[in-house]
Image (cartoon, rainbow, N blue to C red; front, side):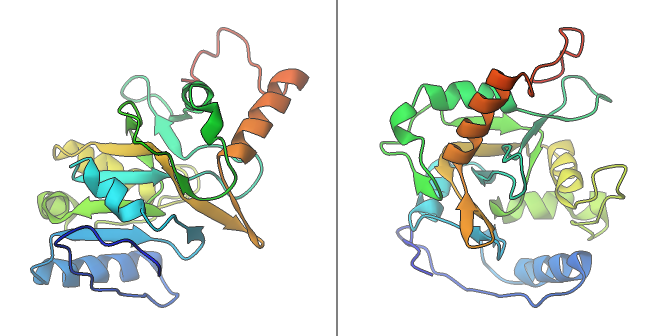
Length: 224
């Protein structure tokens, strides 16, 4: 998979078959925790990543850290979600993600890439993100075991979001492991034959600002 291997790390690759997300994920985690492996790296099959992605994610020393992924469908928004207060609905962090990349305009590119040298302000603590390209230390999963009753992943209903990622990050945070996204490590989310990336997001943001599509009243106030 053309992956640069961090020094001292031995890989054991597992490719899961299509099927029920909850069953596949939870069975994989159970098997992982039976092993003496330290890290679980989740990569979805609709994602392309730069060969240095794992090295970069491990460089932060965080137990739960993800590459930055953008939506496959239009608009290509960043998978970085935040709640402003407990009980509030989640909002995607559009504006602050845009501002961060405007500080690094030379690195606004299409598809998967890594910004070098690593910007020290690249890491963002998040409430939840996609597990499309996420590095998880076994301590996170062990700490969650009793809280989730060995159902680390469970699908939301459509009202709650319809996916499995939100609940996972909420439970991890509850047991003391907040999630992070490395904005300098971008994984491409494949739609058709092309992966979405930063440039797609920036173009959408510029056009939506020009047309007024992305504007909202001051009273809405929930967009980070």
